[in-house]
Amino acid sequence: MATETTEERIEEVEDGVREMTFVEHLEELRMHIMRSVIVIVAVAIVVFFATDIILTKVIFAPIQSDFLTYKVFCALSHKIGLEGALCYDPTTIKLITLDMGEAFLLHIKICFFGGLIVSFPYVLWEAWKFIRPALYNNEINATRGVVSVSSFLFLLGVCFGYFVMAPFAINFLVNYNLPMINDGGNMIKATSYINYMIMFTIPTGVLFELPIVVYYLSKIGLVTDAGMRTYRRHAIIAILLLAAVVTPPDVMTQIIIGIPIYFLYEISINIAAKQTKKREQEMSS
Image 1 (cartoon, rainbow, N blue to C red):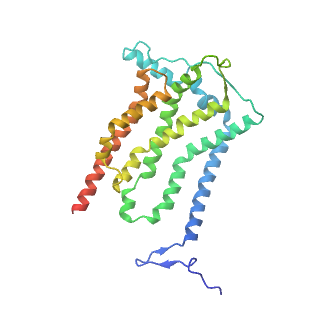
Image 2: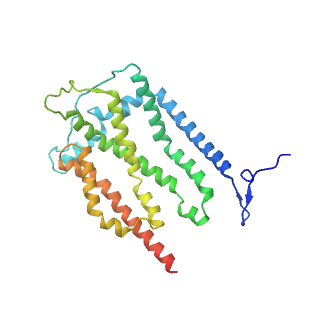
Image 3: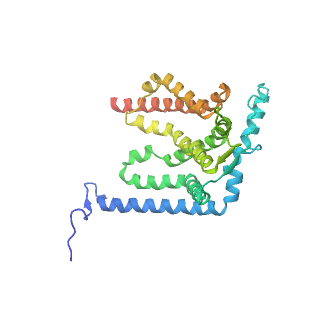
């Protein structure tokens, strides 16, 4: 019978819990990754066969005049007395492909990122299952609900990027012209459009994770509410610059884009304050 090596043997720790070896940790991680990939691929296959609906009703909806955002903002502007200042009519554009195979590769990209967005809660849950055994009971209790909250914030950010950022940014970028540069009669590469849609949604979803990131960083003392208040003015400037980049050049729209991001920053300050106070009480006791 072959004897077990030190790396292969499962050692017993003082509390009687069996501790996995490095190789076993890798195997466990591989299983979590495989399950996540399987779910992403499964959702991507569904997107593949529902391409007509996904493209016309979701991805290309922001360039159609009946898009929900245009209706809501226009009605809101009339209701608050802005006389249609927030009414936007999307510029008619023609999406084209220039390279052989570009349409196929674009289709695959749409399926992959669609599968990733829809499967994000499950992927996060698999990551949590891998990390959870390494945590103590008090740490598990402190992170209870982290998957649900993180998934909600991510999907909320994606929806914000899709319904708010994308329509205004697309209109601004399509209508932006330079002297002596032919706009091609509003003919836009389909790949460029899809890449921008990805940029407007997924990074925004990640940005909306700010409160939960601050929560855990403040628990270990890396972020404090005092520090975030000190740099509040810098944060406001950064938020306004971000809003100016992704929106048409009018102040009202920039404010509408900047308010939710600044609201998240203020929520993060309150979260950090509670964690700082809690940590100080634990240290003094």
